[in-house]
Length: 221
Image 1 (cartoon, one colour):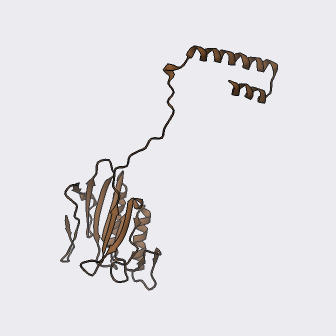
Image 2 (cartoon, rainbow, N blue to C red):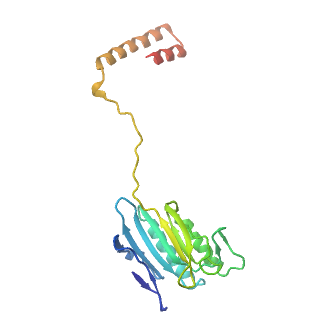
Image 3 (tube, one colour):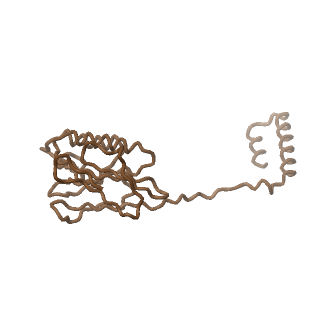
């Protein structure tokens, strides 16, 4: 799948192995360089993948549009979101979760962080991907499912971000529990015991026995 950039001779690309059941998600498309794909995995949450690119850090619109679609995706029930590519936010030091000194367009950097926080998303890449800057990011709402995220030498001026995600089926292990077999109960004996207990309670009331004596009687029964 490809999505052309507006006025720029380039595009964002999203490639998925053809062994998976996938489809486009028109309701998540927007007026920015992003493409979405829905991947169905039996026994697992539906995975929503997106590839995003915004060439100008100074333009707020691209990040605003991205935030709108992330918000919409995060409201879909039982979703596993993976959003990645070049977000072009060089001012973020993701290892310390702080904006670097002398960063330009601070408001857009902060806006992106607000988008993540407001929608329960986490950014996972904390190493530089182009020179000293971390431009290529991986955003998700299930960070605990990632087995590793690392950078590898790239074919262009950007390093490759490699992320390994555990999407295996999750088996629910049921705890052992006691199941009473009422059919095998000796109901005649139970009936006799209840009658005797009732008599004991009446006797204790008549003798005005204290709470400790009554508790002892119940323990014995």
